[in-house]
Every structure is written in C-alpha cells, then in structure tokens.
Length: 261
Image 1: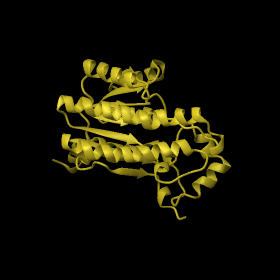
Image 2: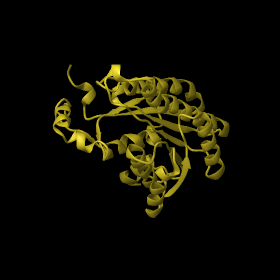
Image 3: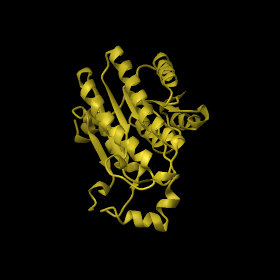
Image 4: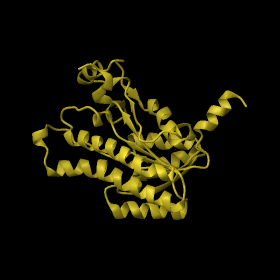
C-alpha cells in the first residue's frame, strides 16, 4: 500500500455521520464542505431552515451526502428535538462540530445584560447543550465519537471590545477539558480548535483596512489565516488520525498566541 493511500485512510471520514452547528455561513459552512469531501454524511444545522438549505444543495451537487436540520443551540428542547430527528432519519452522529456562536463588539462599560446573554447563551451554554446531548446519544448507542468545540485564541488571551466573547471562549476551553476527562471512558474524544483571525466574507473589509493591517503586524508571521488553514487540524481531530487526542486545544493562528508582550 502506498504512503498516500495510508494517509488517505487515516484522515478518511467514510461511513461517518458529522453534525455541524451554525453551518449556514462562515466557518460552519466551510467545515460542512470539508467533512463532505472527506466522505462524511453531513448534518447541516442552523436556527432557521433558510440558513442551511443552500449549503445542503451545494454539497449534494458535488455528490456529497447532506441533510438539513433546524437547531437553536441555546434552547435545550430545540437541541434535543434536532438530535432525535437526526438519529431517527440518518443515525447517531459520530462527529460533532460545535461551531455556532456570535459576538457583540463594544466597550466593556457599554455592554448590557442583553449583550451578555446574546453572546454567552449561544457560545457557551449552546456548546454545552449540544456537546452533552451528543455525548448522551453516543453513550446510549454504545458508539465512540469525536466532539470538536470551536473556541478562539481569545479563550487564552484577551482583546478589547469583546469581553463577553472572550469570556465565553475561555469557558469553551475549560468545558472541552472537563468533558474530555469524563467522557474518555466511553471512547468519546473532546477537543477544541482555537482559530486566530481568519479572513471570511464577513470580516474581509476590516482585516484588509488600515486598522486590520495594524492588527496583522502584531502577528509574528505577519499573516492572517485563511479558511483552508483550519481544514487539516479539523480533520485531524475528527478522524482516526487523532485517535489518541482528547482534551487538546489546538491553536491555528499563524503564531498570534506566541506574540511578545
């Protein structure tokens, strides 16, 4: 067997079912296509059906397997209902990409309770609800699994104007480690990806502006990440290539976290 075949099998997701939250746009949308190309049957979720329909259609147009399910990650009943629908229609997901979240950018003293709840609920509570529901479903089915929580480098460092977001992502880092500890006995791995600043259609204008350029110059490599930079690390954690990894928090940031103080 050639080395390329061995590597292909190691990272293959053939026969796996992968569920992605917040999959209508940005990172979640991108991850859905990467998982499908790796062979997984993908469950594309978002709060509203019109947010994921296009993604499902595009994956199917590329000969991939995809289904859409509405899920509000911050609502326990919505999460439980979505998992019940998925398991009844497709099967128990082997891989969970816990990606849904949002931020509010303003000075600390300008944030109000609605801002706090609007960020903490989907980012931290939602990650916990989805991960624990996924874990219960896997345990009941007697299946191993991989849960990948999408945190941020702001979970380990801090930036101005995004206090609730940074706090929520720090919580996701600790949630990942706590779940990894308790779920290892069930052969369920829990890891986190910590993206740095990734260029997407939503932030491209800012990151290519004068202020964005000043931010870029604080990164040791002087480069922002592209969506594709996350593909390898995400597939490592999702596939058998990362079979011995749990409780890991993998930064993908072109060196931003190791910048000098």
